[in-house]
Image: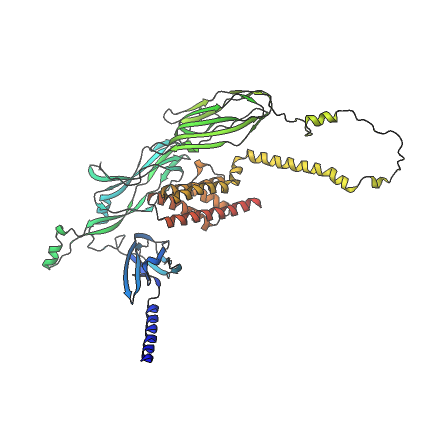
Length: 612
């Protein structure tokens, strides 16, 4: 009996092992077809089989490069229990189309199960020419044609003006119009603002629909996006279309049938419907930009366009030598305030000036407005009555069509003798040292000491010459370092370039803080500012000239690889995309790491090039 129980136990153990083997984890990629027509829909499935679903995490889909996602990820799951072991199957499905001809690869997806990484296989898709007349492979039972969809669902790009001068604000508003029921739209392609400096305007976190009449027809409309554009060059500039993938819910077209039950259930009372993925594309926007007039342009003009007020202030006019004074410059108003430069401060001899502390406060509701300030710390070293020349700031007012120059009054500073004296002698001796040296030398002994004449060659040792030359050598080194520092201080762009990485790290700290607070909108904004700010400083690029195309051109000239340039463009596009449709925190963390890696790689390439 014991032998039989033992054999039975061994049999159960073997059977249990077989069952566990059958329940081994598996993660695979499948498609419903590997050869598709151009713009034909097909389905992709990522299926993980085996194990407890609660232990699955970190699912990462592929990039779907060369494909367009119409729907997904759509998640489905099932669960089974065998001999007390829980096994789950989870499937992530997508509906894709391939817009281009050729052979393309859907790369592998990945996820984690019990701390172990799993990856799917990859699949090649062959895209052939679509011989049908319709762009997408919709059958004859389609509930609504493309022409009908375009009449009932569309996007308009509306501008507040079409003719402006260089630097004048143009506001572009993207509005969605619909007479049909729609689901959550997904951005397919963001507009490109080539030749403009762009600033996103506040529109609210949620899309709010209202009623609006357009060309005599009643629609439900909502504002999707508002952008303030400042042209950085003259001529005819074009803003590319904004594209959205919109799921449109329409009533399904009834099929003819002799079955009375089919005709009964096809009745409109039951409201059978289907969802159609519709690509809505806005119109292009053309802006005519005139150059700023040369007539009447002041020498102090530095590109400010709008309506501004300028003032300068000094915290005190009576000061002792070597005590600090704060000189504050401030510009307030409406226009391209983020792009303007405040006047340079020229100080009289005997003053020491430190780098200014800059700050700004920008309001992006409707017309861009705000405040920009610079605070200089200056230290007078020499007593006397000193005078700082009047500071001039000018701007072009598009409404008045003329230049306006504002002048801050001159500052007169009475510098009295300080509590501490600094030696002015070039020798570096203090007054006490000079006083001691001025006393008469007293001879201690004048009698003959029996001195013996020695060989001249032994009188002066080699170390003496070394000690004599060393101070002269050190003096030349100090002078060289001082000249180099003065040159660097004068070359603001070079200083910015060398401090670009340090500034980028500070900006990215703000992004990390926003991510910790789960403020994804601010997080993506700080990532974009950090990357753009780094590139502007490193490439010595003015904000008014900053654009994706300009950055890519300068990076290419700096021998940065095409792959790294594409990575930069991808990060910027993802930031813009995510402001409209924020992604999961895991994707946000990946974007942060990608941005840090890109900055490090560019820093190594560009800085290494300069050192050669």
